[in-house]
Image 1 (cartoon, helix red, strand yellow):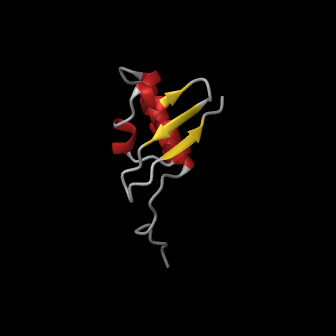
Image 2: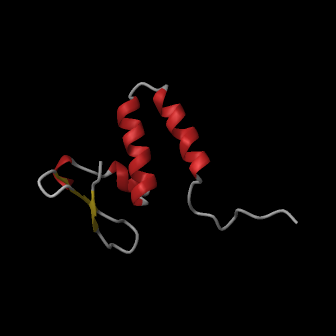
Length: 81
């Protein structure tokens, strides 16, 4: 019996790796790779990544404010190197 992926709502590591490889060959590889990693690590939707603004980043505390669109629950995420 073949497993159904109909309920899966996240990317696998292999899929993320392939996305990063494609981003590296694009016009803005640093930006695109950063967005892919942020989406993967912080569980962001594309629309949440697109709505990020520079003032959402707090370099002093090393955190990122993410305005969550689903359920309206915004979150603050620590940034690690």
